[in-house]
Structures are given as structure tokens and as C-alpha cells.
Length: 292
Ligand SMILES: N[C@@H](CCC(=O)N[C@@H](CS)C(=O)NCC(=O)O)C(=O)O
Image (cartoon, rainbow, N blue to C red):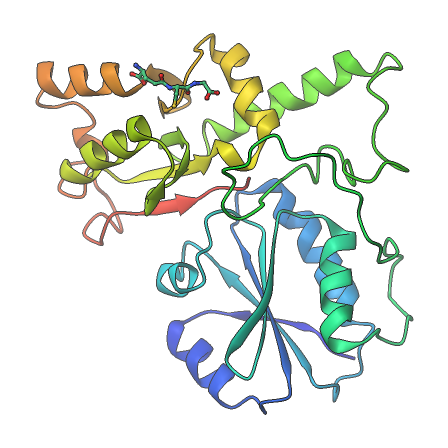
């Protein structure tokens, strides 16, 4: 049966894909070790892979988006989990977030169904009735409810918010937010991505961080309305961007700009040239894509 192969270097990736027959469907799975939803997606993908025989014209490759930033950038990975389906060098489809049914439907659309003898049960492939998108500006459709409210977009299995679950859902959301704000030592919650900001305030904040050589992770709040609205309440801060250092809110663009003006040492230890750089500090700025 087919398995998911972890790719550990760019050269391994390049030689791996260049040796694929043009008819083989390649499924690239970008993940990050700290992103809880990736744990679930890893299980989903190995289960899905196991439904195909080893000699089927399909290959599953897993890539750590932070370890392999150039490949992640090449495929516009702005959030993890992120799945790319490619054949003959052409990207056919991408799936952002960890909706198992969506991933399975996409793979089956291009590779046909596997034997159906999955190691563990998978949700059936289905056309998901998505609720209306609240953010038209979402660039990649990323919506990461998985791990917190699986299949929330499926009306048959979506949690019933009217039946007294509200407190639990809020707790789950707050747990998720408290993890997200600490996902990297410096975390920027912004509209869009550093390479394609969707709002002038976010663009200027990215510009400042870049100018100062700060290493940071980012989260595109346009891709997740739950995080967008939840974070306002969680941090009692009504707008974006929001910059966090070690999980603590610094503020928006105005505050960040003020901090840089008033304190030449501000975020210095997180800069590429910072004294406390540690391993990897000499490398280029890290913009860790964060689960969204
Ligand atoms: N003065 C603010 C400007 C930020 C701002 O006004 N952001 C607005 C427009 S991009 C916002 O996030 N509104 C709430 C929302 O869109 O959810 C700052 O320093 O960050």
C-alpha cells in the first residue's frame, strides 16, 4: 500500500518529483510540528494513502514548511496544514486547513478512489456545503477548524451552537487562541500574508518588521473568521494587525511603530542580527506560516 514519505531536504524533493512519471498524482502535505491540526491531518493522509496500492500512480510527500521554506514559498503555503495536488508539474488543486472530507474528495477527484480498505475509518468524501464565507478577501480559502470542531462546515456534523455548547466552544477557541499567540516568539496576526498583505496597516507592520530584520510567525486572520473575531475579545483589542511577543500582546501598527521609535533595542533579541539569536539566527528572516 502507498505511504506518506517525509521529505527532508530540497534536493530530495527536487529529485523525487523529477523522477515521477508524468501521469503520477503527487500529493504534497505541508505541515509544522507545533500546529495541532497537522497531527490530525497526518493520520488522515496516511490512512488515505493506505487505501492505494504501492504501485498506484500516486505519491504522498510530507514536508515541514519551516524546514523547507523555499518549497513552501514556491507553493504559496501561508498556513498549515496545506495540501497541494500536482501532476506533470502542474498544480491541480490546493486544500488549506484540515477538512478530511475535502482532502479525500480532492485526491479521489484526480486519482480515483482507493481500495476502500483504509486502516482506520475515514469520513466519506462529500461535497461540503460551506457556509457563506464571511471574508471575501480570503486569498487561499484557509479555514482551520479541524482539531477543534471537525467538519464544522458540514451541516450534518457541525456542532450545534444553539444547544448549550457555547461555553465549551468558547473555551476551545480560547485554548486555541492562547496556543496560536505563542506559536512563534514573535507572532503577527495580520490581514493577508507578508508577501501579499490585504490591508495598509498590515502592510506597514510587515514593512517595519522586515526593515528591522525581525523573525516572526504570522497568521492570516482573513482566512479564519473565528480567530479574527475571537482574538479581538481575547486580547481586548479591536483591530488588526496585532503583534504578540512571547504570547503577550504588544499592540497594533501605531504601538509597534512607537516602540521602535522609542526603544532602539525593541525586539532586538528576535532580529536576525540579535545577540540572543541562537541557532538559525544567521539565516534569513523566518516567516513561519501558522495554522489557519
Ligand atoms: N490604528 C490601528 C489601525 C488598524 C485598523 O484600524 N484596523 C482595522 C482595519 S484593517 C481593523 O482591523 N478592523 C477590524 C476588522 O477588520 O476585523 C493600528 O495601529 O493597528
